[in-house]
Image 1: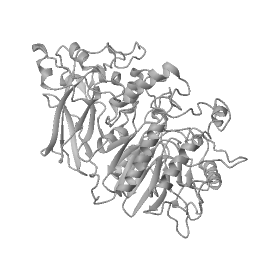
Image 2 (image 1 turned 60 degrees about the vertical axis):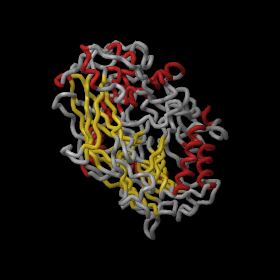
Image 3 (image 1 turned 90 degrees about the horizontal axis):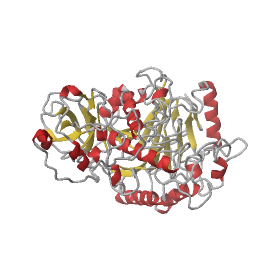
Image 4 (image 1 turned 45 degrees about the vertical axis):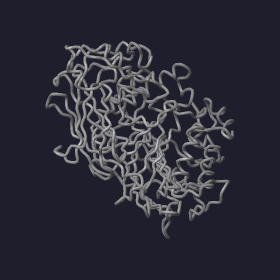
Length: 592
């Protein structure tokens, strides 16, 4: 929400009248329900002296980015970082977010930076589709977000920024709009899907490899874009402490945005991101996290969301609820993409410490898992989700893709007990999962594909409503869809940082034997997966990164899978179960 202020800037500030603060979407609030998270422009105007940073005083240190594409517009982003490293203050008088003071945070600067953008269908910027100008200040960490409009559907565009009145330009970015909602898509659409990028635990080669291959149209990030805790392994993320304040979260994201491969990915593809828990704090739920609750957690979450909104190329799209990020995208009549928030929005108590009923509050959670009103999404998001699924099916979209943070399918070790081992995922919210299956069953909704992250391991499953509907694990009959769950960009799995592959693979074999719906599993590799989506079929390829300790383009193809339109299961063939695998363990098939 922007505060419209009719302020006449005096002669000393005449240059400020040439552009608008309102054009910079970073000043807005991530939520219409929380106008206090917007930066009050009345205060900004009052404080300005008319002094602007010169081109020599700012740099495009953190590159460019685009995201949340629609058919006729896209969000584009940059940051004009002052060479003096003047970091935005945590507390702006009159208040952006009332976060605890921090001696490292600079006071708000009285100077503004002016930035212009152009977006064109050609790399020489001779065919400009839209352009604009805006200011940025320390109040939004010198970030700039525009909505580039007047664009054509499913079209590649190039964009760049420059410091107003100068020839100092940013690197050029590339982006792509979506097909119009009811458009017949002329070719398959390709996505790269990521989660869990921990800067201290390695280089972001997974981001860079897709740039090097130029193999997709868009990038989905399912969360844990940053990690909040202090760590110093392969490299150090600033600030050198766990993040609690607005300054902390801004500085942490800024550190991540120095990784060359992450910068390249942002500059070459339109991103559609959603947060997980570590964008705020570990195992966050409605009222707290593993190590914060009450007022401390509330302020911490406000700071984290404010920084995320400033730095990520996403919109405020119908965010008329409490810090909502769940939203949807229609990609022609090929597929609808529903991006959920199963961690931060309104979920009930989770396991904060301990696992599988052992330690921490895990025994308390174990007593709650069967409650019929228990929810991982919040009831308002649930109602929206089920309605979106029904609408997508009714309008005739070929596929329904669901971006989801945590593993949806049941997962048990099958050793001594069938109790699921991680109640922090959908296995801790059984009634909510049943309601999803019931919606799919009642609406006869086909071609639903869950895309999941968080676990730091790779899992591919049929969506089997075990105990409620018959399911044949050999043929896939009775399945309601498919789940593709990717590994981490860098974050360690419980095993891969400790044990070699010759131990990890047998454990994967144990897991696929213990879980009827689980068709392939890999614990060893970090990586990502790509989707190739057509009207007749959807395919997935999983890739592993051999070495995270150095920047490299090396990767290993781990597995391939196919889902045919209308079959609601992984495709089988006479010799291999649900696909072809080169690592981990494959049900009814041999790892090649």
